[in-house]
Structures are given as structure tokens and as C-alpha cells.
Image (cartoon, rainbow, N blue to C red):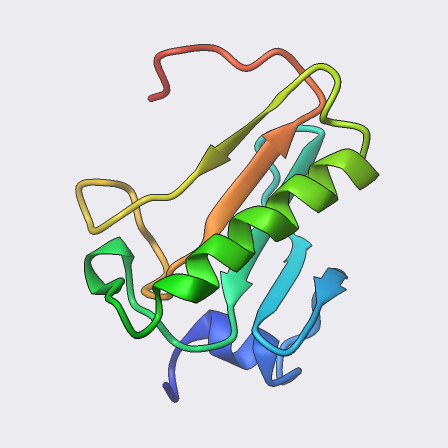
Length: 114
């Protein structure tokens, strides 16, 4: 996807602070953090949003959650807890049309979100 910000990060056209990468997933620090720890985890395959998860790509979503678990433990978030957020569509607050999951932690998070 030529104009996709996250595809450009995957292709290393845009620099980012990568914390994890394998054949199907990449995780990097958010450039506009909303918590002391704010990581984005995305599939390398361009999937626009949760609306586009299907039987052919759902395996990567499961893998993303395993990566999230491992990163949370590595970053010391597993003891006190953390939040995983996925925004879907305009009204859901999705600003980049490439499915992504936010890991937020390092402070007490309030509820409900904005």
C-alpha cells in the first residue's frame, strides 16, 4: 500500500524504534506516546482494520497477541498490568488504515477512555 505510513515503517522507508520484528509482525515505539510505555504492534501484511480479519489472515492476529504478551513481560508490564487497544474505523478513532494494536502501560490507566 503505497501511502500507508505503517507499510513504510515495515519497509524501513520511515525510521522507527523497533522493539520486535519477525517474518509477520513488527513492534515499535509510538511517536506520540499516551503512557510511559506506548508500543504499536502491527502485522507486516497490510490488513486495513478489524473489519478485514478473515479466515486467511486471522492466524497473524493470534500471533500478534502472543508478541504482545512477550513484550509486556519483557517491559515489566505483566505484574501491574497494561492495556491493549485496537481502534476500528473513523468513529473508533483509527487514524492509520493498517490494523494495529497499542500496548499502553507504566501508569494507572483510567476508564472509560475518551
